[in-house]
Length: 255
Image (cartoon, rainbow, N blue to C red; front, side):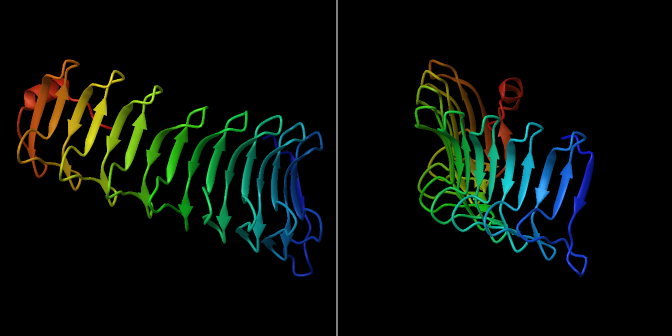
């Protein structure tokens, strides 16, 4: 953005202020407005539209932010909206009193050019959070979900299944990870599993509270396509017990 100059209006006390029009603005060399701000007695505020608007050189809107009394806030829609050239919406974000928040749906939504949703994120009071369902989702063009991320208060968390699920384009499982309060953790099986596109298991990782751990077998296993074990590594409470040379030659970090 090539900004050439700026200006603003103020009230009797010197605070940025103007009724019914932008109180501050930046403009380009050709005189077109690059950004305008609506202020009320020193606070970003507008009752009937966005308080901050970013414009492209051709005059089209690139981003709009809705402010109330100095905070990102909108009661009946997104407080921040990004637009592509041509006017289609790229992304929307909902805010309440300055925090990323929405009660009745996703607070963050990304759109494709055709208007379909590619990603959505559910936020509560500034953190990714959703009860009983994934807080972050990715969608294919046909509307089906290809990745799910469960969050509680900003941390990966799910007690009745994997907190991270990613699928291949064809719909088969590519990866899953069990997490409790932000840490990879599972007591009744591998905390992390990766598959090949043909459905065969590529890798299993056993973890307790993030640490590699397993008492009845190897904690890290790599498989060949035929299901036979390619390499394995034994761990107990984060301490390696064996198989190191195999692991050093063949290991792959999960995630």
